[in-house]
Length: 407
Image (cartoon, rainbow, N blue to C red; front, side, top):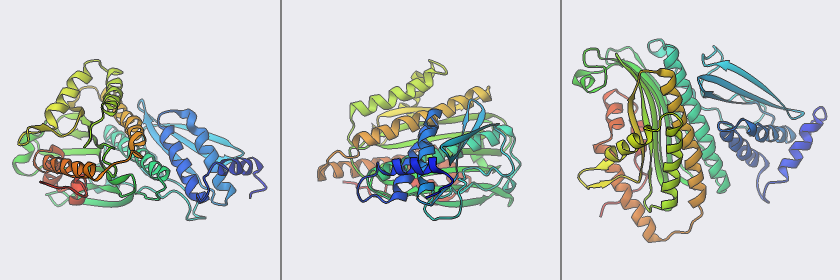
């Protein structure tokens, strides 16, 4: 109890009353806080959810400060919430990162172990060529999106009674020239709902080796490159919950462009989920250009196809590449793709995660996973790019399912 903060104590007592019998106070509050942070990315009014959780942390003696930052319309908005009488501070900055504002980190008081774990930050820009404003802004967004997605996925695990959390491993690469070539952070969680989910971020640069550069947009005559992005693949425990892939990226050669997309991969397709996924992505596309969705959904159908099986990998989504010419416009679109994914996929997971299933469903899921593995090992351009540029092998192959069968 904190006599100097009676309002915080009152809020803390109130929110703790909502937990189910047997829930540990700190675990319950982490769940509340994680959901509030994820929702904050979509609606600033959810600041109250974070504020009440912080008040409750103070009430049980584990006070903390949490920074949830995200890029919005080219500006970086930092919502700093402190549970002091339920008041909040709001500070807005431009997208340039300050010297003490490490990407992807959470600031917490070190007076207790019962606080949210810090996300591993990416390696500093000093490990490769200096980043310009556009490169820094794109990198910052991908790292923030990683934090928001991981928080929401961990919140889903809490709803299922699991304490699973992401493990983060930082890695770095050397350029073929021997110079530092950047690196990334691999995040993996294995839980009750997410049998295996990987969320990776990376920022790399240097020169392409050999003939590979000639296959990359704008690198025919100049092998220098820069790439930053987020890549996510989730394989689910319940066969009725679809697997999913999402990736967005920003690349620089003699050209500058965004690419990425998201596609749903259900072992047991449900029309409601497919329609929801596509409608959400279409809305994100239409907000920028009504021609985007027809073009990008067809591109996904063409790309996520397994020629030797003559089947599609899943039920589609969107895929785009070489989006260039107007950085601000294309960056906004890429951000909205990430936000659309964050809105729709957790909704689908919650809709299906408690649905009963049988052994035959699991068998169908594992055989379908074999098809997924075949595509990623034989045809996926991201896998090839990672291997050709000296990326972390475990991060590159995190997309492979934990269990698969071939009949």
